[in-house]
Image (cartoon, rainbow, N blue to C red; front, side):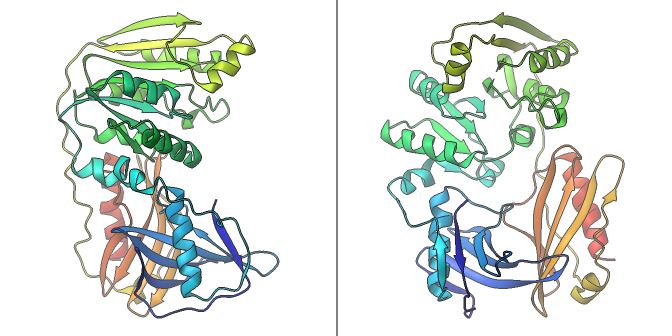
Length: 392
């Protein structure tokens, strides 16, 4: 994680622009918070920097995890620009090397969730790879199938940057990269437009099965987005994961299954090469979709419609989680920017796949800071209840 450790810094007058970045405000901890947050923007992407004391009474400045933008070079640049503006007395840092060679390509091929949410590409057949790791399989398939648009989904930042560099070096034009939770992403992909979904060597999560990619809900969403005859391909070295997944697949209707053991593919990942050297068995399940699904509507508008009383919100701020039948809401922290502006950190939505967001309130108006929530049923219900709670 890029960071700068400083002895002290000076607050400056905001908002102010510095090169491609704009620093918007300082948000001080008010309830249940210990860090100071700095609102920032890059090309209309809103994000936060966090400033927090460590045990040595030093200040660590880094990106806030919830709003973090990609690629990492942008975070490094934001930290550097901020410290110049704040006249930081730097003790140590890990951002000395700022290599911007691939930044332009990153902007072209690395897309935020808003890009897909607002204007999902439909001019080509879509293939999706979930958790592409080193990217060997994704890059190979993209070069082999030039008429297909590939969407690679990964949350591991070094893997994302490695693949973005290879896209640049190999001059590949038909890949889009997304840093997002794949379980949520599928829920707003249009129906019947995907040819293949690859899930190769997902984390088994044997002790936390609720975190697995493969679930009944995921399989149902995969069936919906796949064309008739489209395939979902699971490849794993875990016999437990294979057994668990096969049981779920067998519960489905209107699908066909193909099962293989130690099947040789045209390309293998570095992890697969390692498993083969260790003579581990590798299991494949291919689900072939046999039905056409109904279209979906993802047009919900996550706007707050009523004026809010900031003083009332602060005085009644309750950090106890609120649990409902099929969703939850947890107001976690509140920060104050000035007497007319506050920032609220919260989590909500589905129990197994929650959203983490900030709500920015200014002059009695509220909006989500950074990305808006995805329009799942749980998130829509949560948003409606959140607005009721904020309005007392």
